[in-house]
Image (cartoon, rainbow over all chains, first blue to last red; front, side):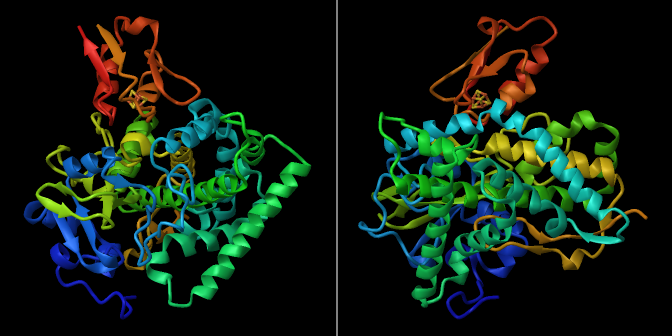
Length: 407
Length: 64
Ligand code: SF4
């Protein structure tokens, strides 16, 4: 709902807002129109924000870590002040870090998300999907987003970090607060402070528990790591836990949801996928291209001109990888979902040094979730298209998908 | 035919490795390296071209 801080948008070229209901429900026509008329839009909202929509501009900015900083990657009314975040580390390293600290923080985490580590989690994920599917058997109408998609990354991430599976509801709450901050922040800062302290206390408890009982998980790994001969600072460990929770759950939930939503109203694609499982890797990449969940953001680090637009230090820049993925200059038939598309250099996981750290994990979860669902329900369908709702903010995916299961 | 991964450009998307594990391997950091000195065995040319066409960072090149 638009409140008085977010009046409805009437012109996306001069006054866009990525939380506007029109954008949330269907952003593609907005980007198509801008690409044809005004490929870098500007809005005074959030204190000044730019919006490039072509693959060329989105990738140029993603590669330019000198003129654009990642100190803040979620557009909000509040910009980080010089004292707020210890640059170049940022609150959630390495996503909020710039070079050269970025490389150290990232190198530390990469092995935990490398293909072989991720392969080891596949049997757990497959079992989890089947347990969730078992619970849906015999029902007529189920919500594929709420009863299936969202549980998968919540449980996988909890397992990786070694946090109790029962805390999933709390993680969901925290993620909502952070990711939809742009819309939910009120002037009531006390409340945010209390939430922040509660989360720090939660992490502190988990850390204390892992110090007392070290085990084979990411938390123990972070506590024992000595990337430069010293243990990580406590804030670095907490910041990385925060990053993994926030970046690893909503995003993958959204990707799984979008894929199931697509199959629920494109019976030809569903039929083909059920009959030709070899197509799955291509279909998964095509879903990632067409329904990329994540739009990142940068702050302009120093005045710079991109595509003739004068960007000023401190301006926000939205980096809509989903819009780059629909650029007809870069992709053939960009607006169509072609599940056997063979050439697909999509940017769903970003480009350049901030390439999504968890891309191998996300891809595995998405593939296993779709494979198991299609195996179990090879002819499900959307029960009520008008009841599908979409998340607002920089992570886009369906939050409710009522589907009818074959009886 | 030979394939080559430019280590400077590779950001570890691992598209090449999942499409053509016969031609590429990944290290612990997820960065790709070509196997077998980059020589593409007969019959795998299509896979080599697929890897090139799916690397988002344009890190892979083919020499015939
Ligand atoms: S697809 Fe490209 S970026 Fe990804 S691992 Fe292979 S060479 Fe590196």
